[in-house]
Image (cartoon, rainbow, N blue to C red):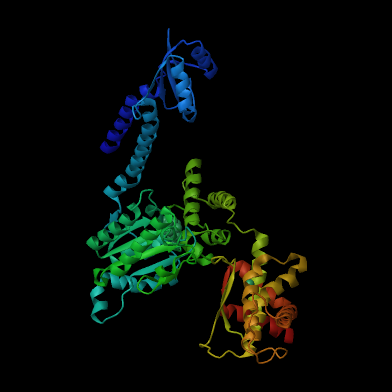
Length: 574
Ligand code: ADP
Ligand code: ZN
């Protein structure tokens, strides 16, 4: 604070010193024509040529004539002298007004920079990064996210006793990425991790590393790791790591160079720290694809833990965690609230409970009732709608039909990989997902399996068309189409699987494939799409049951998918 006061005083002083000179307008101005008239009437006593014009002494007063300097030629000076006036030049550099016009902006720029430095650097350096010693959070505070918690057990073991790992020569994790949408509990999980392991915790954000002055961001990275080594064992959590870790573009501007220097420093620090030091870095992001590949190499952020939006069961568990400190009316069912909150993140659900408690308190009620919870839910949905995160019922049904189509084809085609799970909870860019597990690694893939994969890929769009009609199909199939086109192209051009083209390797001429190859690709895709449509039409009941199951549970596992499909088939056979 003392520094900022001193700098402020300096600015005032500079302004006070310079302003009078800058603003002072010592003499009146006359026009050029007036001056010429005075000159021809020989009334001019002396002329001082200075920057921007002439200071002229007339018999009775001093005046100034504005005149571009370029006009004052030797001839012109001759003309003035001829009229009998004295001519002189102002010594350059002593023009107060001119000097002020240079100095004032410089002083202002310096002052602004100093202010920025105060704001962005001096303040944080005294308290940044903040180190928390004994974190109270535990995994119990994190509801759901069981897979993530299981994956992190190893990290806890390492933080508790790095020696046990190094003794047997195990390679120790240094960095891991938590990938998932905002509000899903990434920070919470990192904290709970530090709490479980009983280590120090430092949380910073990628945006802490965008400082306006050269070198500051890079210095902060060093400082962060220096602190971590001092406080080891320690967990560093970098939220929004994409802010420092996005792909280097190699642009030449100062900002680009500064950005690259910061990212390089992070890479150097990650490579450099001694693995026995017991420091682990956790980065959080919603988008791995924008990160610089160098960050993801072994020894850096080489593990990823996915943290997704919670499904119905997860949401109920999260509601229960947050309701621990709230008095609920007997018999309120958080399960039904969970059902009515698709698309909510953990943060939204925490918010919901809190809003409900506020509604209750405002009414002076003793307990939180179902009505309070529903009012809170509606309020939050409105907020989410403004952020356009809420999927409408119509869209949910579309996604459910699309995913049911994939799941149905996958479970009806023996050559396809088994369905592991199907979900209508958004994952990354996708609004839904059908996950399939290969039974064993395949090195030689038979054409039969490739075709099954293609029919499964087409199954999403085919279901949309069969259920809603050709005019209602959506953009949701873009990645399916890209995937299918890629496979078919390779079938035809690399793997000799098209009878029409035969066993030749086709190379591109420029951007285009030969016409008959393009036609063959199209024919195969069309065939597969027709096969998918037939499969769906023939099993329409199973598709509808799958759709309803997805709408109700949001995620269904492979066994459930197969149970539904086989039940409908048995009914058909009977
Ligand atoms: P992120 O870092 O992924 O943006 P946060 O960890 O900051 O999300 O989550 C914000 C808040 O949401 C947490 O403080 C917590 O109250 C709540 N929350 C999120 N996920 C969960 C969860 N799985 N269990 C309990 N609370 C959660
Ligand atoms: Zn799809």
